[in-house]
Length: 377
Image (tube, rainbow, N blue to C red; front, side):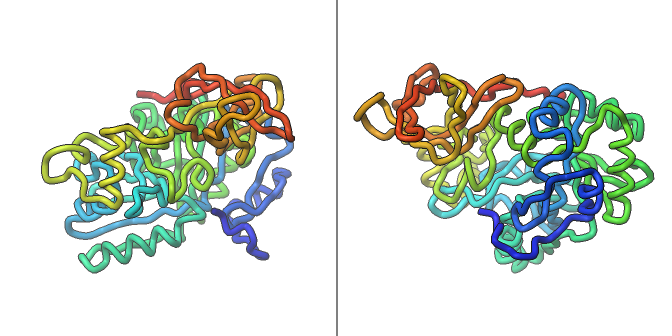
Protein backbone atom coordinates (compact mmCIF):
# COMPACT_ATOMS: atom_id res chain seq x y z
CA UNK A 1 0.00 0.00 0.00
CA UNK A 2 3.01 2.30 0.38
CA UNK A 3 4.02 4.62 -2.44
CA UNK A 4 7.54 3.18 -2.44
CA UNK A 5 8.01 3.93 -6.12
CA UNK A 6 8.66 7.61 -5.40
CA UNK A 7 12.09 8.55 -6.72
CA UNK A 8 12.50 11.22 -4.05
CA UNK A 9 11.21 9.87 -0.73
CA UNK A 10 10.22 12.37 1.89
CA UNK A 11 12.22 12.58 5.09
CA UNK A 12 11.35 13.06 8.74
CA UNK A 13 12.95 15.70 10.95
CA UNK A 14 15.13 12.93 12.45
CA UNK A 15 16.60 11.87 9.09
CA UNK A 16 20.08 13.30 9.69
CA UNK A 17 20.17 11.62 13.11
CA UNK A 18 19.33 8.25 11.53
CA UNK A 19 22.28 8.63 9.17
CA UNK A 20 24.59 9.73 12.00
CA UNK A 21 23.59 6.62 13.97
CA UNK A 22 24.49 4.38 11.04
CA UNK A 23 20.92 3.61 10.02
CA UNK A 24 20.44 1.49 6.91
CA UNK A 25 17.86 3.55 5.04
CA UNK A 26 15.04 2.23 2.85
CA UNK A 27 11.94 3.68 1.20
CA UNK A 28 8.82 2.99 3.27
CA UNK A 29 5.38 4.54 2.76
CA UNK A 30 6.99 7.26 0.66
CA UNK A 31 9.60 8.15 3.30
CA UNK A 32 13.27 7.37 3.74
CA UNK A 33 13.31 5.40 6.99
CA UNK A 34 15.83 3.26 8.89
CA UNK A 35 15.26 -0.48 8.55
CA UNK A 36 18.03 -1.19 11.08
CA UNK A 37 21.06 0.32 12.80
CA UNK A 38 24.47 -1.10 13.70
CA UNK A 39 23.06 -3.57 16.24
CA UNK A 40 21.03 -5.35 13.56
CA UNK A 41 17.41 -6.46 13.61
CA UNK A 42 17.82 -9.42 15.99
CA UNK A 43 19.63 -7.47 18.72
CA UNK A 44 17.36 -4.44 18.29
CA UNK A 45 14.33 -6.67 18.77
CA UNK A 46 15.71 -8.34 21.90
CA UNK A 47 16.89 -5.03 23.35
CA UNK A 48 13.35 -3.63 23.06
CA UNK A 49 11.94 -6.71 24.78
CA UNK A 50 14.51 -6.43 27.59
CA UNK A 51 15.02 -2.67 28.02
CA UNK A 52 13.81 0.17 25.78
CA UNK A 53 13.84 1.00 22.08
CA UNK A 54 13.41 4.39 20.42
CA UNK A 55 11.44 4.47 17.15
CA UNK A 56 10.90 7.31 14.69
CA UNK A 57 7.24 7.20 13.62
CA UNK A 58 7.07 10.78 12.37
CA UNK A 59 5.96 9.56 8.95
CA UNK A 60 2.55 8.75 10.41
CA UNK A 61 -0.19 11.35 10.17
CA UNK A 62 -1.26 13.42 13.18
CA UNK A 63 -4.69 14.95 12.52
CA UNK A 64 -6.62 17.39 14.71
CA UNK A 65 -10.45 17.59 14.49
CA UNK A 66 -12.25 20.58 16.01
CA UNK A 67 -15.85 21.67 15.93
CA UNK A 68 -19.34 21.17 17.34
CA UNK A 69 -20.47 17.56 17.63
CA UNK A 70 -17.13 16.26 16.41
CA UNK A 71 -17.36 12.93 18.27
CA UNK A 72 -20.82 12.13 16.92
CA UNK A 73 -19.76 13.11 13.41
CA UNK A 74 -16.66 10.90 13.53
CA UNK A 75 -18.76 7.95 14.71
CA UNK A 76 -20.38 7.91 11.26
CA UNK A 77 -16.99 6.93 9.80
CA UNK A 78 -15.76 4.39 12.37
CA UNK A 79 -17.46 1.44 14.16
CA UNK A 80 -16.24 2.49 17.61
CA UNK A 81 -17.55 4.49 20.56
CA UNK A 82 -16.13 8.00 20.13
CA UNK A 83 -18.79 9.86 22.11
CA UNK A 84 -18.05 7.75 25.21
CA UNK A 85 -14.28 8.27 25.01
CA UNK A 86 -13.25 10.13 28.15
CA UNK A 87 -10.97 13.17 28.07
CA UNK A 88 -7.36 12.11 28.42
CA UNK A 89 -8.02 8.70 26.90
CA UNK A 90 -7.44 7.20 23.46
CA UNK A 91 -8.95 4.28 21.55
CA UNK A 92 -8.00 2.04 18.65
CA UNK A 93 -10.33 2.52 15.67
CA UNK A 94 -10.89 1.61 12.04
CA UNK A 95 -12.05 3.45 8.95
CA UNK A 96 -14.40 1.06 7.15
CA UNK A 97 -15.87 1.15 3.65
CA UNK A 98 -19.39 0.42 2.45
CA UNK A 99 -18.41 -3.20 1.77
CA UNK A 100 -17.33 -3.65 5.39
CA UNK A 101 -13.60 -3.70 4.61
CA UNK A 102 -10.90 -1.76 6.44
CA UNK A 103 -9.54 1.40 4.79
CA UNK A 104 -7.07 2.14 7.63
CA UNK A 105 -6.56 1.55 11.34
CA UNK A 106 -5.87 4.50 13.60
CA UNK A 107 -5.83 5.89 17.13
CA UNK A 108 -8.38 8.44 18.37
CA UNK A 109 -7.60 10.56 21.45
CA UNK A 110 -9.96 12.87 23.33
CA UNK A 111 -7.94 16.02 24.07
CA UNK A 112 -10.81 17.94 25.65
CA UNK A 113 -11.49 20.68 23.10
CA UNK A 114 -10.48 18.54 20.12
CA UNK A 115 -9.85 15.00 18.90
CA UNK A 116 -6.36 13.89 17.89
CA UNK A 117 -6.08 11.09 15.34
CA UNK A 118 -2.92 9.19 14.40
CA UNK A 119 -3.20 7.43 11.04
CA UNK A 120 -0.88 5.28 8.94
CA UNK A 121 1.65 7.01 6.72
CA UNK A 122 0.63 5.33 3.47
CA UNK A 123 -3.04 6.19 4.06
CA UNK A 124 -2.86 9.68 5.54
CA UNK A 125 -3.70 11.67 2.40
CA UNK A 126 -6.71 9.44 1.70
CA UNK A 127 -7.75 9.57 5.37
CA UNK A 128 -7.58 13.36 5.47
CA UNK A 129 -9.60 13.57 2.24
CA UNK A 130 -12.20 11.20 3.73
CA UNK A 131 -12.42 13.25 6.92
CA UNK A 132 -12.68 16.57 5.11
CA UNK A 133 -15.40 15.34 2.76
CA UNK A 134 -17.49 14.02 5.64
CA UNK A 135 -16.81 16.55 8.41
CA UNK A 136 -16.06 19.96 6.92
CA UNK A 137 -19.66 20.41 5.62
CA UNK A 138 -20.71 20.08 9.27
CA UNK A 139 -18.44 22.90 10.40
CA UNK A 140 -15.62 20.69 11.68
CA UNK A 141 -12.04 21.61 10.83
CA UNK A 142 -9.60 18.89 9.80
CA UNK A 143 -5.91 19.77 10.16
CA UNK A 144 -3.00 17.51 9.25
CA UNK A 145 -0.16 18.60 11.51
CA UNK A 146 3.15 19.24 9.78
CA UNK A 147 4.84 20.98 12.71
CA UNK A 148 5.23 17.98 15.05
CA UNK A 149 7.32 14.84 14.99
CA UNK A 150 6.28 11.53 16.56
CA UNK A 151 8.68 9.21 18.35
CA UNK A 152 8.00 6.10 20.41
CA UNK A 153 9.81 4.73 23.43
CA UNK A 154 8.92 1.06 23.85
CA UNK A 155 9.95 -1.68 26.25
CA UNK A 156 9.90 -2.61 29.96
CA UNK A 157 12.37 0.15 30.88
CA UNK A 158 10.43 2.86 28.99
CA UNK A 159 8.62 4.14 32.09
CA UNK A 160 11.79 4.45 34.16
CA UNK A 161 13.65 6.21 31.34
CA UNK A 162 10.88 8.71 30.62
CA UNK A 163 10.17 9.30 34.32
CA UNK A 164 13.65 10.76 34.70
CA UNK A 165 12.46 13.56 32.40
CA UNK A 166 8.91 13.78 33.81
CA UNK A 167 7.86 11.74 36.88
CA UNK A 168 4.17 12.20 35.96
CA UNK A 169 4.44 9.46 33.32
CA UNK A 170 4.39 6.89 36.14
CA UNK A 171 0.74 7.79 36.78
CA UNK A 172 -0.28 7.03 33.21
CA UNK A 173 -2.06 3.78 32.39
CA UNK A 174 -2.58 1.93 29.11
CA UNK A 175 -4.35 4.22 26.59
CA UNK A 176 -3.92 7.42 28.63
CA UNK A 177 -2.78 10.62 26.88
CA UNK A 178 -1.53 13.85 28.46
CA UNK A 179 0.44 17.02 27.74
CA UNK A 180 3.74 16.78 29.62
CA UNK A 181 7.12 18.58 29.60
CA UNK A 182 9.80 16.23 28.28
CA UNK A 183 13.39 17.46 27.84
CA UNK A 184 12.20 21.08 27.82
CA UNK A 185 9.48 20.59 25.18
CA UNK A 186 5.69 20.53 25.46
CA UNK A 187 4.88 16.98 24.40
CA UNK A 188 1.68 15.06 23.87
CA UNK A 189 2.43 11.72 25.49
CA UNK A 190 0.27 8.62 25.05
CA UNK A 191 0.82 5.17 26.51
CA UNK A 192 -0.14 2.30 24.25
CA UNK A 193 2.74 0.19 22.92
CA UNK A 194 2.33 -1.04 19.35
CA UNK A 195 5.28 -3.42 19.86
CA UNK A 196 3.28 -5.43 22.40
CA UNK A 197 5.53 -4.00 25.11
CA UNK A 198 4.63 -1.21 27.50
CA UNK A 199 5.52 2.02 25.78
CA UNK A 200 4.95 5.69 25.11
CA UNK A 201 4.31 7.67 21.95
CA UNK A 202 5.59 11.25 22.11
CA UNK A 203 4.35 14.00 19.79
CA UNK A 204 6.94 16.77 19.95
CA UNK A 205 7.40 20.08 18.07
CA UNK A 206 9.76 19.59 15.13
CA UNK A 207 12.21 22.14 16.56
CA UNK A 208 12.69 20.03 19.71
CA UNK A 209 12.53 16.54 18.19
CA UNK A 210 16.23 15.93 17.56
CA UNK A 211 17.27 17.14 21.03
CA UNK A 212 14.60 14.97 22.64
CA UNK A 213 15.66 11.89 20.67
CA UNK A 214 19.33 12.47 21.53
CA UNK A 215 18.48 12.98 25.19
CA UNK A 216 16.58 9.69 25.35
CA UNK A 217 19.32 7.86 23.42
CA UNK A 218 21.92 9.10 25.89
CA UNK A 219 20.41 6.70 28.43
CA UNK A 220 22.30 3.38 28.31
CA UNK A 221 18.96 1.52 28.47
CA UNK A 222 17.79 3.00 25.15
CA UNK A 223 18.79 1.97 21.62
CA UNK A 224 17.58 3.28 18.27
CA UNK A 225 15.34 0.70 16.59
CA UNK A 226 14.48 0.39 12.89
CA UNK A 227 11.57 -0.91 10.85
CA UNK A 228 12.88 -4.48 10.81
CA UNK A 229 12.61 -4.99 14.55
CA UNK A 230 9.43 -2.96 14.68
CA UNK A 231 7.90 -5.53 12.33
CA UNK A 232 9.13 -8.61 14.21
CA UNK A 233 8.01 -7.13 17.54
CA UNK A 234 4.49 -6.38 16.37
CA UNK A 235 4.26 -9.79 14.65
CA UNK A 236 5.17 -11.61 17.88
CA UNK A 237 2.58 -9.40 19.59
CA UNK A 238 -0.11 -10.56 17.15
CA UNK A 239 -0.66 -6.98 15.95
CA UNK A 240 -1.80 -6.18 12.42
CA UNK A 241 0.11 -4.17 9.83
CA UNK A 242 -2.11 -2.21 7.48
CA UNK A 243 -1.52 -3.17 3.86
CA UNK A 244 -0.57 -6.73 4.85
CA UNK A 245 -2.91 -8.07 7.53
CA UNK A 246 -5.62 -5.46 6.95
CA UNK A 247 -6.92 -4.10 3.66
CA UNK A 248 -10.15 -2.83 2.04
CA UNK A 249 -11.46 -6.37 1.49
CA UNK A 250 -10.88 -7.65 5.03
CA UNK A 251 -13.52 -6.95 7.67
CA UNK A 252 -12.77 -6.16 11.33
CA UNK A 253 -14.44 -9.44 12.33
CA UNK A 254 -12.33 -11.53 9.97
CA UNK A 255 -9.30 -9.76 11.43
CA UNK A 256 -10.30 -10.70 14.98
CA UNK A 257 -10.83 -7.07 15.95
CA UNK A 258 -14.28 -7.62 17.45
CA UNK A 259 -13.01 -6.10 20.72
CA UNK A 260 -12.55 -2.75 18.96
CA UNK A 261 -16.32 -2.44 18.36
CA UNK A 262 -17.93 -1.44 21.65
CA UNK A 263 -21.36 -2.72 22.65
CA UNK A 264 -23.03 0.64 22.08
CA UNK A 265 -22.18 0.41 18.36
CA UNK A 266 -23.33 -3.20 18.01
CA UNK A 267 -26.92 -3.80 19.10
CA UNK A 268 -29.91 -1.73 20.14
CA UNK A 269 -29.99 1.98 20.82
CA UNK A 270 -29.62 4.97 18.56
CA UNK A 271 -25.85 4.58 18.10
CA UNK A 272 -25.78 0.94 16.99
CA UNK A 273 -24.63 0.64 13.39
CA UNK A 274 -24.63 3.82 11.33
CA UNK A 275 -21.05 3.37 10.07
CA UNK A 276 -19.84 2.26 6.63
CA UNK A 277 -20.23 -1.47 6.09
CA UNK A 278 -22.37 -1.95 9.19
CA UNK A 279 -24.59 -4.58 7.58
CA UNK A 280 -21.68 -6.94 6.83
CA UNK A 281 -19.78 -6.21 10.04
CA UNK A 282 -22.74 -6.64 12.38
CA UNK A 283 -23.84 -9.71 10.41
CA UNK A 284 -20.42 -11.32 10.87
CA UNK A 285 -20.48 -10.44 14.56
CA UNK A 286 -23.76 -12.34 14.88
CA UNK A 287 -23.12 -15.26 12.53
CA UNK A 288 -19.32 -15.51 12.39
CA UNK A 289 -17.08 -14.72 9.39
CA UNK A 290 -16.20 -17.13 6.60
CA UNK A 291 -12.46 -16.74 7.36
CA UNK A 292 -10.42 -15.73 10.38
CA UNK A 293 -7.00 -14.29 11.14
CA UNK A 294 -4.91 -16.83 13.03
CA UNK A 295 -1.40 -17.34 14.32
CA UNK A 296 0.68 -19.89 12.44
CA UNK A 297 3.68 -21.83 13.76
CA UNK A 298 5.62 -23.62 11.00
CA UNK A 299 7.45 -26.83 11.83
CA UNK A 300 11.16 -26.51 11.17
CA UNK A 301 13.18 -23.32 10.79
CA UNK A 302 11.98 -21.96 7.45
CA UNK A 303 9.84 -18.82 7.86
CA UNK A 304 6.54 -18.54 6.00
CA UNK A 305 6.24 -15.04 4.60
CA UNK A 306 3.37 -13.04 3.12
CA UNK A 307 1.75 -14.68 0.11
CA UNK A 308 2.41 -18.32 1.03
CA UNK A 309 -0.70 -20.39 0.28
CA UNK A 310 -2.17 -22.78 2.87
CA UNK A 311 -3.89 -26.14 2.18
CA UNK A 312 -5.79 -28.64 4.31
CA UNK A 313 -3.75 -31.66 3.17
CA UNK A 314 -0.14 -32.60 2.41
CA UNK A 315 -1.04 -33.45 -1.19
CA UNK A 316 -4.10 -32.42 -3.14
CA UNK A 317 -6.65 -31.02 -0.74
CA UNK A 318 -8.31 -27.62 -0.77
CA UNK A 319 -6.72 -24.19 -0.53
CA UNK A 320 -7.91 -22.81 2.81
CA UNK A 321 -5.96 -19.61 3.31
CA UNK A 322 -2.86 -17.48 2.91
CA UNK A 323 -0.08 -16.03 5.05
CA UNK A 324 -0.17 -12.23 5.38
CA UNK A 325 2.82 -11.63 7.70
CA UNK A 326 5.69 -13.89 8.65
CA UNK A 327 9.33 -14.10 9.62
CA UNK A 328 11.67 -15.15 12.39
CA UNK A 329 10.50 -14.37 15.92
CA UNK A 330 13.62 -13.61 17.98
CA UNK A 331 11.79 -13.87 21.33
CA UNK A 332 10.00 -17.05 20.26
CA UNK A 333 13.23 -18.52 18.90
CA UNK A 334 11.69 -19.69 15.63
CA UNK A 335 9.50 -18.73 12.69
CA UNK A 336 6.10 -17.14 13.32
CA UNK A 337 3.39 -16.09 10.90
CA UNK A 338 -0.15 -14.75 10.72
CA UNK A 339 -2.72 -15.24 8.01
CA UNK A 340 -6.34 -15.82 7.09
CA UNK A 341 -7.85 -19.28 6.89
CA UNK A 342 -11.34 -20.65 6.37
CA UNK A 343 -13.28 -20.63 9.63
CA UNK A 344 -13.48 -24.44 9.60
CA UNK A 345 -9.65 -24.58 9.64
CA UNK A 346 -9.11 -21.85 12.24
CA UNK A 347 -9.24 -23.97 15.41
CA UNK A 348 -6.09 -23.76 17.51
CA UNK A 349 -3.93 -26.87 17.02
CA UNK A 350 -5.17 -27.61 13.49
CA UNK A 351 -2.40 -28.75 11.14
CA UNK A 352 -2.37 -27.08 7.73
CA UNK A 353 0.13 -27.35 4.89
CA UNK A 354 2.03 -24.44 3.40
CA UNK A 355 3.25 -24.44 -0.20
CA UNK A 356 6.92 -23.45 0.11
CA UNK A 357 9.33 -23.65 -2.83
CA UNK A 358 7.34 -26.40 -4.50
CA UNK A 359 6.94 -28.50 -1.34
CA UNK A 360 4.26 -28.63 1.33
CA UNK A 361 5.39 -28.19 4.90
CA UNK A 362 3.24 -28.56 8.03
CA UNK A 363 2.14 -25.51 9.97
CA UNK A 364 0.07 -25.44 13.14
CA UNK A 365 -2.72 -22.94 13.84
CA UNK A 366 -1.76 -21.12 17.05
CA UNK A 367 -3.24 -18.61 19.45
CA UNK A 368 -2.24 -14.95 19.22
CA UNK A 369 -0.21 -13.23 20.54
CA UNK A 370 2.94 -15.33 20.37
CA UNK A 371 4.46 -13.16 23.13
CA UNK A 372 2.10 -11.88 25.87
CA UNK A 373 1.51 -8.13 25.98
CA UNK A 374 3.26 -6.13 28.68
CA UNK A 375 0.90 -3.15 28.87
CA UNK A 376 0.39 -1.27 32.16
CA UNK A 377 -3.31 -1.63 32.89
